Image 1 (cartoon, rainbow, N blue to C red):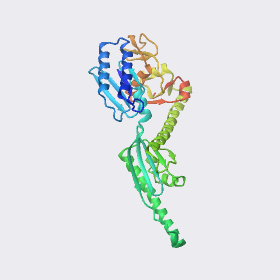
Image 2 (image 1 turned 180 degrees about the vertical axis):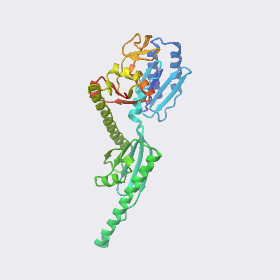
Image 3 (image 1 turned 120 degrees about the vertical axis):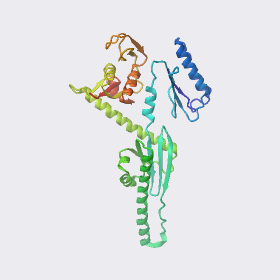
Image 4 (image 1 turned 30 degrees about the horizontal axis):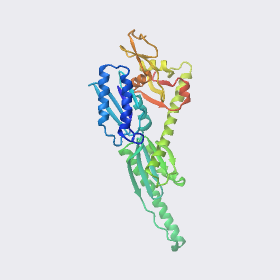
Length: 349
């Protein structure tokens, strides 16, 4: 059994609010007259939530199966309330959350003498540091030669500062690697800053912002996540474009689209990358003997054994794909994938 529970204090001010929501889901589950083992699991979850102190936790994912399984994942982001009774843990919601939020983003804001370096994870700043290389003061009473000399000296110090900031950003990356980098710098400094970045950082650059050095952490996180999300959508679109080309090519076995062909490819362990439209779910069947998954039952066409109805065969496919170390991409608002059946796979062979 799997329970997702939103415990976000911004939506549920009192603990009684999310406990009431859990009670409602449990009541609905009990109305279906589940076996005794499920009733006991429901009681176990209810008792846990009664004792739970949320702190900074905003979402809970609970996986339970008697004495064999008890796993609680506390998330710093809210989740959609769900209670799923199934033979296997329902991991797709958790995988989608991780796919959307669990990308680490490095942020470098810098001007000619000050820099802010931040690491964003799960929508919050988890590390922050600064560096400061003061520029020489300009004295208007010292004459033109003196002014030019000070300006030249200031430019050299500013360039050194940008190299210093870029070096510290790389040090942060080496300590705590991140997938994306967001750069906040004035337009005239962008070329020099990018030249100073290590190749590993340039490869992770997803966007630039004009946020001021005084921007709040909330503003920085918001902009950084939006730029990272845009890059993720570009990556998803790239996968879908490859799938469309593979499916459309005569004689190609590079990809399949639609629920039944994709389930077959997952069962045959031919999938390299599984693509699923966000929120897509469908009933289906799972063989109790060979674990074949299909849209039609009740007899398995692989081994002839009896199949059982599953509430969401897409979830079954995602679980199998993850178990095979496949890449799984949940694609949001991708019309091309929706047209192809909302699910598809790029194949290994």
